Length: 285
Image 1 (cartoon, one colour):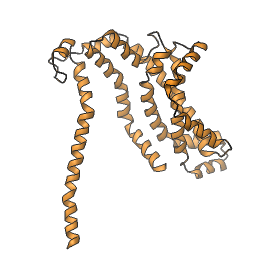
Image 2 (tube, one colour):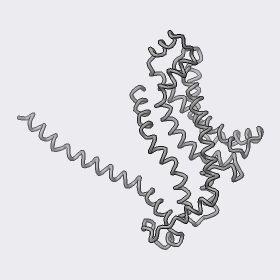
Image 3 (tube, one colour):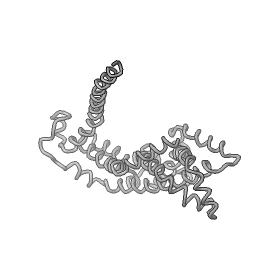
Image 4 (cartoon, helix red, strand yellow):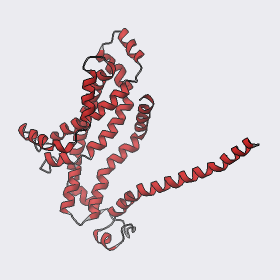
């Protein structure tokens, strides 16, 4: 009889947990979605309507003049520079980190642990203390004010975290497959490209999305290492629009919306790979 009462009490408590979970989910949706909704509404307003009306007031008349003004203001140039820097940086970052993680995770040699410890220690170096040395190096090597000068810092400062994650990921790949490949006559390079690299796609996809967002939004090095508008990226375009159109908030919001759209689309189409990579790392690590 007591068991029946305990079961009935648990059944009565279950809906309460669900109600609390739904309330919390709805609250978090409002907190996370309110700025995005505010941004969309603001882009569809004129400057006068934004100043005279409330912040969350719906636009009286939908207008896309802000987007047209952004497009005519050189948005494509900034966008192309950001895409080019992203593709080059991300490609180098993923390949270098996978090449470094393979021997650290699969091979035993004397300097394995010291090298791995140095890589982990490099994760704690603040970016801001390297601004002056990187700036001086860019001038000395005649790289200042070229878009490819941003590739080096993007790769260097995201490399320790990428190697750390990929090393832990590759350590849990079955060694039987690697041994079978060696029996078939595959060397270390063939084993890496035919076995280890394909099995690390979920981890590489996770790092690609994570590092891609970081590189896309990078601001400080782009501001320090570039000067002309022809080589600057989207974060600096937002900075320049803020200076040129100080009070034109709808125009700035339209630029922010267009700048964040590629990242939103990347997450929408790549969220399954991101979740799979995170779950695989959690289970294996």
